Image (cartoon, rainbow, N blue to C red; front, side, top):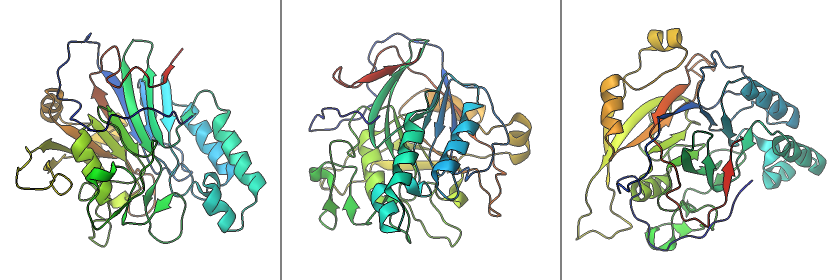
Length: 331
């Protein structure tokens, strides 16, 4: 499920190069996260479903199987999901360290691999081509900065998303060919948020990942979706500043956040989903921005009261990534 791909050594912004490629109708994405074994309140039709992890509450193979059945009920051509820190039986090292049986881990892995209608993505970069001919690349990662004791975690001073030359001196680069986010990727789907973007916990602290923010600032995908921090639910667009010559590349932060998008809760519940306002959608369509979506549907009472997000992306026929990247065609 995780495809290895070659990387070019020097990333460059992706979405802003206007290559002349075939224009297709917008592709509709339904973005969900942190359902925690609760059934979805609505199943809006879409082309692609993105579930950003924490499908379950206890992470057992049985709970994972049940959550996948809920995803199967959504009317969509393609359904993609990643694990979150609650999918503990899928993280072999963590599961065994907590006394779990190897057979249960293998059962969980078999559960997500055998389902044809839902594609569970391991960490890495993938490309999909829809029946419409629209093609997109997506980098997926279930990992989040360490907090307490849970699955798929890394130390806060470990940078797994950037090449070594973009890691600051205070951090340790642990990136691999699958964990480093490549240039020119269309979508990034992680379980957790980047630093200072839709990542404020209930205690008011920003709990996102510095290294993920740095990677997004360099790659500049069309869309970055995640969950994990329930209190951070919502959407926010950012634009980008030009580099300052006197600043070191690893230290420069080009991200310039715009205001958080307003969400009318009553209207969203009536429609069954949240979406950008027409004005924001038009500005986003013009390009040069990344849309961040925290789609954690659990509210402060740990009830699935929030609506999933619907985002329309203009994709082209053909991938922006190098031709050597293995692809999936949806039939």
